[in-house]
Length: 294
Image (cartoon, rainbow, N blue to C red; front, side, top):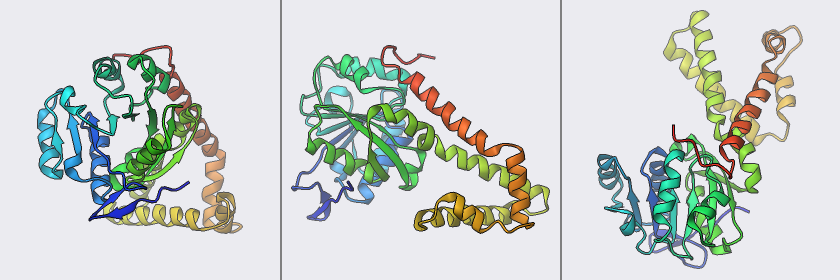
């Protein structure tokens, strides 16, 4: 069900007029993408966002100056009255961070993890109390407001908690609620998905050079081709196979190209790569083990 925010006094508030205070543990690229998206779409005010980064204080100052958010000197300050706390740290750091926040988090505060492989049972076990928890898997397209995010909730998350989470992630793209056991598949398909498209673009760029197109001209054609194909997929009622066949004339150029892809079993390679990513996500999501500290 799509989330529809209500406009109130110059900024967006949640359904029912509930405004949010949000704290970020971690200040990396995903945290910045979410902060930028929320402020651009006026989901929250800059003064209602706090961030803390354990090591890179320069990074915190940059976010403070760029977006006008508040920075916290420590975790204790970060937990002064937030409605939502977003765990945006590296997976290897999550166990120690969760241990540290255990005595600080309120039972009504929604804890959202965007750290890969950090499962809801793992978080619940570390916190040691029944609190509302969500696990989200956005992708790097959040940086341009076009992420495809899968999100799962535990039983303690109320309707209000869910609305808050949907408001946050809808600010950086499409958001869909899934069962947690489906998040590994979401990771394999869309979490790693942008890299698959970049891989195709990389191959097209290299092929363009080999057939005599300069890099800048090739980039323009490649970008527009990908954008156009995505728009066709989005707006057409036809499945991808039908769209492909519609531009594949007998004995034509596209048929010659597709024949090579079929001979090299490229479709199966993509299927296998998605399965491999999902399998690795499942390994990382093993709730019985702490993330590797490599």
